[in-house]
Length: 152
Length: 142
Picture: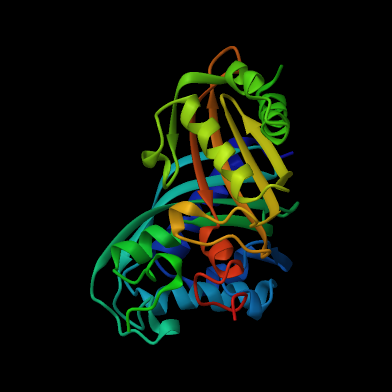
């Protein structure tokens, strides 16, 4: 059985290779074929490995300088929680692209908590996790006004 | 009681609005790191007000622990909440409606040697809830 420390090492390697180096080949390697996403970024895309690969590519397309800094790790043998600060610039395609807004060029820095459930081979079998999307959109000035009023 | 059992008991207590038990399980001066908690009083009384606000907004509010695990003095929990927005959502300027929400959050809690919760970090899927309430554009709000 894997120790909590070994599970944390898997998380550290993933964050380094994926969030710092944007190594899409490593995402493909680290996720099990039957991977399940419990918090899909865009539910219409589904919750399988294919959708997860597209989601990571979208993050890097929206913010080519996006990176993560681990603040805390909590683990058992088969689960690891990653609390991290995600930062970058709203450049590239930009986070407002789905709303038709051009990239703002503004920086953001928000926290997220993610949990990876690992299979016997140390691959990601399931993931759930949420990062502070409202905080990020607020920092970028992309938040819709309260009550759903539209200014434009 | 191990720390995981404390978090399970706390979630049950919130569900029953049993705030005496909440005060027993959460330190009076608990430090919360959750977006929006700065709008509430500090400590456990702010946590209780947030829960009361949830019951007002969603009178049929139900929560369910989807996953939970602990290591040392920390517990990680993934909680699902469902309810009907019969009370609206004051802080977001959302009027009462019969719209249903089904959202979740991930929380890390830190416990003292007696198991009492002294610090929490939480991320809620607020965008999902806003889309379900029709207050934010998205696949579920259109």
